[in-house]
Image (spheres, rainbow, N blue to C red):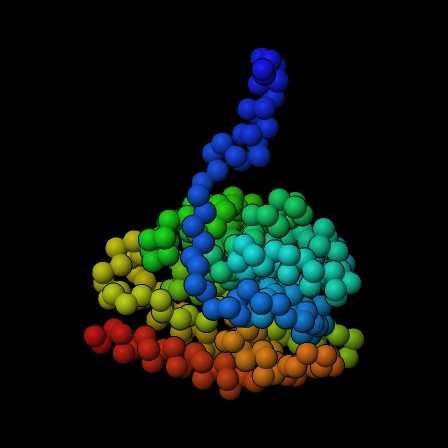
Length: 289
Ligand SMILES: [Zn+2]
């Protein structure tokens, strides 16, 4: 038998632990196995570290006032990200700011849990806020799967060229819409005591729909957004680059496990420009359909 007071306490507990109103999270399955496999964390350049899974990139930026974590993989990436941060000798609980390059389930599957565990503030491109709040349900394409990740309430909304400051580090958000309404990249300077590098964390504008752009009623202007993003991304000045997926910047060819610190492995601008050009050609072919 449950007394009145105990009953109220129980209901309050269930409510706040999310059990009563928990939404069914329908994270798409049958993903590439590399998304869920481990890889060695390492220092990319200066205060930038790779802490993601084999293919789903997560980046840790370590400052003198706590850390910034960009992208959090699938829901099952959580223990890998935490372990990677620990392996590098950093404190997961020191995560102060969370960022993402696009509101798809494979980049923020673990975001809600990391936010709850660390108390970090989530900064989101304002155009992706609705997708983040709805657990992906409002996305023009992925919305067909319903809620694909735990819904999260952003703490701050960002516009193109907005600055994100933490301690001795300042990132600039670059609005690169198309893939999602609020897809974005980040650029910042990092110094390793010998040299300063301008690093681009790029969200490559791949196209995920088979239907025509004109048929995408939930994202008016998608074609124009892609066109603007291609122009913008061709004209970014940087020294090093990485991207949302390890395979997009050939991480595992550029760096083998156990390799020494070597920022210049990530300096190949030619591959970046070729990737942008290849994606733009797919886009140009699509709009001629
Ligand atoms: Zn995506």
